[in-house]
Image 1: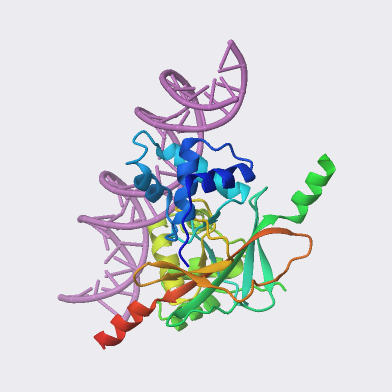
Image 2 (image 1 turned 90 degrees about the horizontal axis):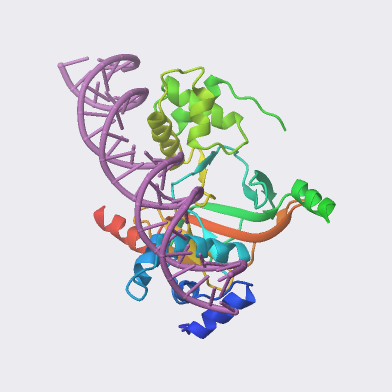
Length: 143
Length: 143
DNA sequence: CTTCCTGCAAAGGGTTTGCAATAGT
DNA sequence: ACTATTGCAAACCCTTTGCAGGAAG
């Protein structure tokens, strides 16, 4: 399934996410909607530098995290940088609180099975994001 | 369930993973077996610096990736560093080939449900590692 | 003696921060 | 004019690399 997205589509997606659609933000959103290559900040920056010669990496950083925090796009981190290490022998998933940053183990009923013909899968990681019980309590007290 | 691990336990785990159990490696492995805090390289380094004053970050880096690549521990990367961004609206998982580094989407039958009382979950990430079809073919040709 | 492991120092790369210039309302 | 956004430059990590010293068999 090949799908194309216009600048108008991208602008609409931004507005729906509550983000003001500046020219740079629209371009970045459109690029993310069109690309299935899971680009990094640097790849986005280089891809758009021709069309926006003054574009800066700072703006790309600002925008992608704005988008990710609003839920308009997803961030995936699978590289070595800032990795954490974990021995626990039982299969389990990880949960990270987006408010306090705490990382906790959560048990997992069963591992998700991929439909991935031809791939040899060595390892499965499941990672949740959200609000931990403490931060939920804090937030409800504030209101 | 609280469990303690001796240096002998750690040494045995290293040997079983095919890794020579040097003093530093045993200490790092023991620390990972005991800790459920998903430590970073720097946290491991600081935790062991008292007992091993000459320990270097280089050795910790070497060791954790040796351990992770042998499967003795798991690495999880969930921080901002080197993040990639992804718009695709349909739920899907990611697969990364440990030989060529390529990242591809894989469709997912159903999302894993966590048993996580009290947590509010906004987002679920599933991430596989292994060998892609191309690298499987390359490897079998070499043999 | 040889090989592997360790660790210092330096380089490299990605990310964040401060602030001035700019654009949009 | 006012406010939000952009983008340059510098600082700030984290990580890797090169190499010399040291440990182990």
